[in-house]
Length: 197
Image (cartoon, rainbow, N blue to C red; front, side):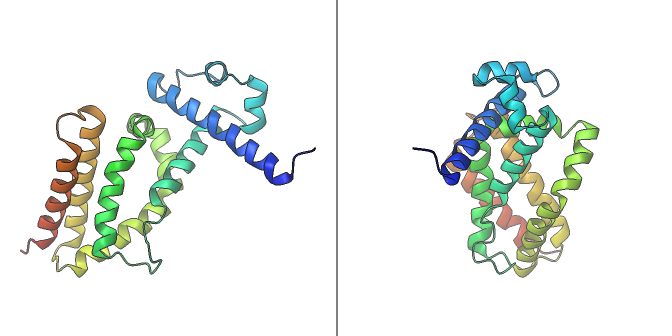
């Protein structure tokens, strides 16, 4: 019995996800530039020709990795879709950021390495800037709603705090128990917001 269009699309998406995950692991382990399509093909147990059936190039695979990762990161950030961030959503954002790092270590390791390379930083900053701006705008709005007299400064401090927590999770995950890191990060964020000049 021939497969339906939906079944064929599902198989296509599964193969694409398999290639993406394999490439992500190799890029994170060996570096983007040091990984070849042949290596991805070998590890994924898929012919090079089939990879090119799904992706135009290694750069296309990388772009797909970033699309996939940032779609997941920003998914359901605004739970009630009102364009505002509540306290519950803010706490969820912090927890999601921390758990995303734990769950997707290969991506964040790759991201940390690539973001320091100027041409890649420019390419991806431009592409994901709008998604990031919406989230930052909501966080800044929440900070201001909590009585912060310096929402821009507090936003910068909270962003730095989260990046530091994520770096700890990538480089020294056993240094702080995850429960403490999550709780302490949330507490620190609220202390920052509640400080008045």
